[in-house]
Amino acid sequence: MSASASPTRAAFVDLHTHSTASDGVLPPERVIEAAARCQLAAIALTDHDTINGIPAARAAAERAGVRVIAGVELSAFHDDHEIHLLALHLSQLDALEARLAELRMMRFARAKQIVEKLNTLGIELTFDEVLKQANGGAVGRPHVARAMIARGAAHDFRDVFARFLGATGSAFVPKAKLSIEDAIRIAHEAGALAIWAHPGEGGRRERLEPLVAAGLDGVEVKHPSHSSEDVKRLQALADFFGLVQSGGSDWHGSTEGPRRLGNMNVPIEWLEKQDERVAAVAPGSIDK
Image (tube, rainbow, N blue to C red; front, side, top):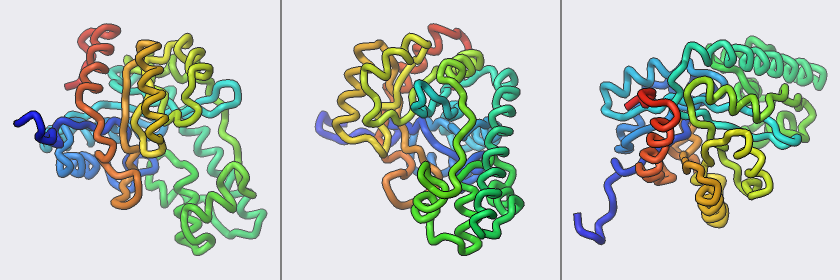
């Protein structure tokens, strides 16, 4: 390849995706098939509070020739700010599952409370309709939204969250709070790196410093919600604190909009740096 030639797609990875194991629209094996079509070298499956999609993803990856990084996305809080944490390069899956089961039960209870609030507002939605949308996955607000849209109680996701499910919506129920310290501990106990997901405008030194002190390993630099200024600032902060960089599309299966598989062009070198960090803290645990 000449110096001016563009790199091949195999030079890129996507380290933030979702499947039907949580709130994505495609089963894990089809997520992997999509990654192969995009010619991605590797993909991280990071469903919310569940690793149930990992076995199917790994089986499909062997056929497709795509590396799968086992991950999970956790919702945590620090000083009343919600922080999403990606635990990447999971190696102790059995030890992790018990903790995740507790988090899924909290999700289940929250969704049930949301349905009850919707009922008091005159929306005749049943919890069974929500569970049907989840189809065995970790239930969450997107499944409530899909059930409402299917029933005709709202036009689309934007309408549902603006009127009902968003922080100012009439049926909003706050999350049970998991501390960021506990979330980082969960990641480390599972042999994973703890990565702050899509910090956006909030990703600044004053908020990052206490997380680093709590054991944070990295920060998601590339994400569809990040501006070019966010990317530059987060890269500088990652260098300053000695954090690994990560990035991904946060893909849930859409073929339109900013969250499309592989569209962040995350360089494979970032994954290699993560591998080095994992090898340093947990030798022999890297899943290649």
